[in-house]
Length: 213
Image (tube, rainbow, N blue to C red; front, side, top):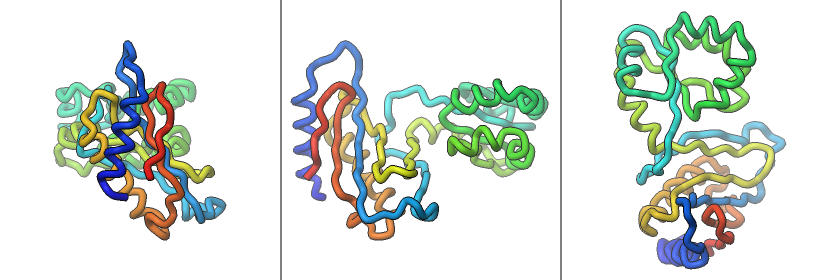
């Protein structure tokens, strides 16, 4: 793919998307080929940090203790859970399930990971939301900030990948750079790289899908 073809598709997408009363998202659909998804080794999930953050409210939950707990509280994240509260949540399956759905990303003080695995693993694991461990005494603030520009990419049973990579208000160049970042990361996970990509489409929330040649 060359940048000119991608930019042409983005401009066409914008032209065919009427003005709305809300800010539309820009999504990408990547159809894959020649991949045996019956083989679990061919499936993957990863986090991609975009060069241009999406104007969205990313909900981060931090499970921490000690200074990391204090730092997370000061950072104003969506939810901070202390060790004592974690043990209470683990006794309430409905609350644990709700927690797994409510937040986009989880971070945790590394020493708490075994406890989290035992008590919340069955809720967070299937959703691909097991916390990223943070070593003791390591600053947690920068990781929280990074998640404001991070998206999750998943390839499971179906040979297609969907991701939100921008909004209609972003410049065409910014959208293009986010698209290329996603593609580079995905190609790095595929056995044949770009040769495993069958087709690529981009669209706004209410607009038609535009094929990227």
